[in-house]
Image 1 (cartoon, rainbow, N blue to C red):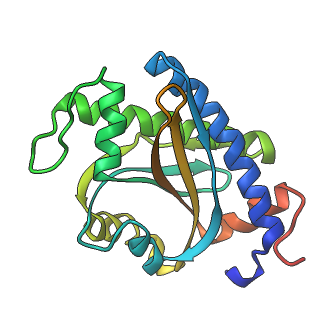
Image 2: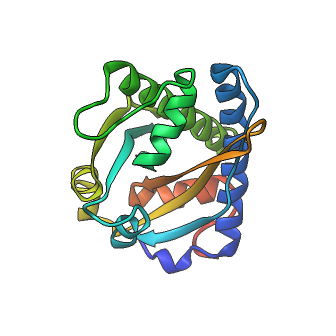
Amino acid sequence: MDFTKINHIHLDILREIGNIGAGHAATALSTMLNKAVDMKVPSVKVISFEEITEMVGGSENIVASVFLRIVGDAPGCMFFMLPIEQAEKLLGDLLGGEVVQLTEGLHSEMTISALQEVGNILSGSYLTSFSDFTGLSLQPSVPATSIDMAGAILSFGLLEISAVSDFAIVIDTAFTDIKRLDEVKGHFFLLPDPESFAKIFNALGVPMDE
């Protein structure tokens, strides 16, 4: 897979799909939180696996992560990663203002369940958006949540795919509580299997070899 063939047209399409997925996710989160939530996708880019670690603050930085496998016509993996303080803010809102501490084993089953539910909503919204645009059948596996050093999480999740690929698509995501104007920022890492890139862009009418 030659990632130099991914150009600004491909990234613009991915950003548009990301924005529509974010719109769906914002609606679902607003219902879940019972208050208005806005979501936007500030940027979409292709980065190396090494840059993923840098984006989340370094390999030893503790992050909250939701990982899932994409199955169907264009298989791959997805990570949703939040810096720990951003995850605590989001989950605190989700749990009615409760003070949430995720480090040092202080997290409860309820906070892990809430984090998993956020991952379910976000991944489902993005994959629905991808399916609507491409006509491809894409379903998420049951998500796995982790709170650990970024390097440990990524080395586990990327172990299989790193044998055939070194790059990922990163979809930056920002949640905003409209009433309080607080913003929570996270990263969505989309890692299609190498043969899936061509399937996705062919389905969108923008082949990789143009």
